[in-house]
Structures are given as C-alpha cells and as structure tokens.
Length: 528
Figure 1 (cartoon, rainbow, N blue to C red):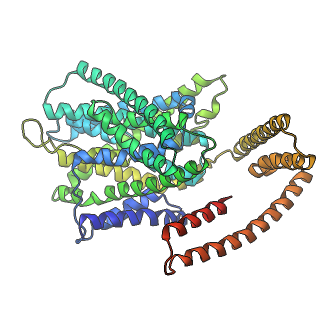
Figure 2 (figure 1 turned 90 degrees about the vertical axis):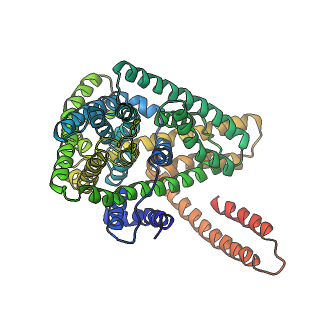
Figure 3 (figure 1 turned 180 degrees about the vertical axis):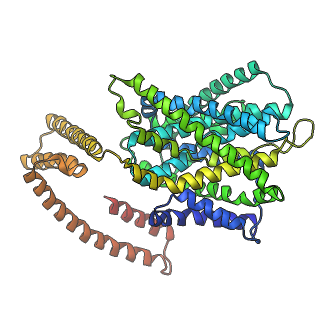
C-alpha cells in the first residue's frame, strides 16, 4: 500500500464512520482514531510522510471554515466572557503549567521546547467536542461555548506555539518581542481576514452561478490562511475573521440553490477532512512506538503526568471561572449563556478533548534548529503529545456519553420549541405583510387572496405545528396529508419521466448535453 492508497482508505473510513458511529452511539472522530491505530499496527501500511510545514495549512483552514459556518458573530459576542476565560486565559494557564511540569520531569528539555509542548496540548479540539455534543443533546449554550472555545483557543495556542518554536529554533527569546509579535500577528490576521472577506463577498456577487460561488468558498479559507501566514499574521485568526464576515454579510435570503448546495458541499468537506485528520492521529501510533522502543516506562510516565496536568488544570480553572462568569452576569438576563449548574460545568470539563490542532502542531515541529542541530527532544515531545491526545480523545470521548447520562444534562427542549414557534410566527407574519403590500398595488380576486392568506399561515404551521389551535391543527394535518399524497403521486410521475430521459442518453444519436439539461430541469422540478 502506498501513500495515495492510504489516503483513500482514510477517506472511505471517514464516510463509513458516520453511520457506524450513529449505530454504536460513538463519535465518528473517535472511530477514525481507532481506525488509524489499527492501520498503524498493520505491517503493509506505510508510514505517513507529510512535510511538517504542510500539516497546518492543509488541515486547519477547511475545518475552521466549516465550524464557523455553524455559528455566528452574534453568538460569539453573547458568549464573549466565558469564551475569553476558556479560549485565552485557560490556554495561557495550561501552557504555563504543562511547560513547568515538562521542563521538570523530562531531562534536557529546554524551557522554549517545553512551552511549545504546552501550547500544542493546551487547546481542546472543537471538532471532537461538537461531534460528541451533537449526539448527546446537550444544552445549546454549552455547545455554543464549546464551539467558541474550540475556535478561538486554536488562535491563542498556535500563536504561543509559534513564539515558543521560534525561541527553541533560534536559541533566543525576548518577552517584549514576543508580546509585540502576538499583537502584530493578531492585527495582521484581522486586517487580512476583513479585506479578504469583503473582496470575496463582492466576487461572490459577480460570479452569480452557485457552482462558481461554492468553488470560491472552497478556496477562500486556504487563501486567507496562507496570505496571513506570509505576512507574519495568525492564519487561524484570519480564517475565522473571513468566515465570520462572509457568514454575516454574504448570505442572500433568496439564493436558495447556493445555500442548499453550499451546505451539502461543506458537510462533505467537513466529514472527509475531519476523518483524515483523526485517522492521522491514530497512524502516529507507529512513530510513537518507534520512539518508545526500550523506554516505555519512562515515556508513558511523562505522557501520563502531562495528561493529568491538562485534565486537572481545566477542572481547577472551570470551577472558579464559571462561578465568576455567573456573578458577572447576575441580574443581566444572560443566564442562558453560561453553565447553570456544577453538573454542566463537569460536562464542559470532560468535553475538553484534544485532537486535530494538537496533532498538526506536534507533527509541524521543525526537525532542526537554525544551527543545524536536531530540534531538542522532538521525538519525546511528539510522543507525549500523542499520549495526551489518546488519553483525552479516547478516555474522555468514549466516557462522555455515560457521564452526560449519569448527570442528566439535557437540552431544554421546551425553550427550543418556544423559540422555533416564535420564528414561525415571525415568518408567517412577514409573509402576511408582504401579501398586504402586494394587494395594495395589485387587484387580486377574493379567492386568490384568501388562498394566499392561508398559505402565509401555512408557512408558520409547517415550521411549528403547535402554532394554531386544535381545529386549525387538524385542518393543517388534513391539508398536509393531501399535499403528501399529491407529492407522492407527482414524485412517481417525475421518477418515470427521469428514467425515460436517462434511458435516452444511451440511444444512438442522443446528445448527452441536451439530455443532461432536460434531466436537471426535472431534478429542480422535483425539489419544489
């Protein structure tokens, strides 16, 4: 098996792990990690040979962009205090604690290299956390905070990582220069992100065609990351800024086809890249075994110690941080934005799994320093990082469903239904107002006006069946059954039409382009 075949195996595994994870009630990223471990134990599977400098720009941009598409700037703003405490402050604290312990227990590990280890294991993985949370029905406020933490802690950790690696490679370190680099990196990243977001938004309008628009969105995160990195800015922060800008300003309510197609394409990209990334985590087992040859007790002890530090620091930080956030929010009507009990705090603690960012940063550690010497204790750092990822991802990822069940932490379905009903009322109201505006300038027959008014009401009823009273709900259900019957019959008719047109593609003298154009027309008609 060569490298290309291994990539295809991981891509296939990424697809299969989703339904298998649903059936086994296990997160797909965890299953992909297990697959990677199994492949690493098979002799004919080759070692992963990816240049370290390509790991971050290849994996992180699409994952970050896909994650941002599921959220919004308003959501980040609403959760700014808990996200700041977790994504910035906690990353600094975890990095410092890990660096202190690693420097003390690993012989010959320089302070700068110890801080590089601390930075790369500090950020919990947003993909792993949300993949688990999505299957468990956690309260939306917890999922929002976990997503926000996962996105912004990558920014903090990667900047710290680059500063630490630069110090280890050059052999010099200046706190003032490091602080200035942090500020400049953030400023450059935000500037690049905003500029590229604005330019991409304008270009999306010019392109018009959904295929071209989606193609542009596939390129944008990579361009944003690479451009910011070339200008010595934070590539991760640039991608986040670009994605948030486009999510806020590039959404056209009437561009249905682009939205549906874009959602599908990005779901596919997210699934495939996530699967490959977590599969690579498991495949690193072979290098870890090679590094630990004859030193298992020593290296496993280091990995266990750093894993304990990472897990305990998160708990010891979350308890007072959650209390402080609740105090700051007291009386402001924002209780929905933070954990409301110690049980939810415990769930947030145990959801702090490490994953894609940590393994990418570990593999991206340079092989040599500026003077040509080997990077200090690189193999040991990678082994310890791998150990932390395995402990947090497998131990916490596999036991989090059990913990959530034991603690009884569940989403407030009544509140979600109430909000859904509120949106349904607003949607129906907007449709009715537009109908009145049309009636003010156009003369509509009474029958047509009444029918359109019913359809405006049906818009809300279809979103939230609880919107109307019992009599209206029964009438809506009857209409729904009639519509479903018509849709079923029409669907069978369209299916027969599609089969006939598709069969014509194989006939002598048939023009495939014309056949495909007619088939697309029937496909679009089927979506109505």
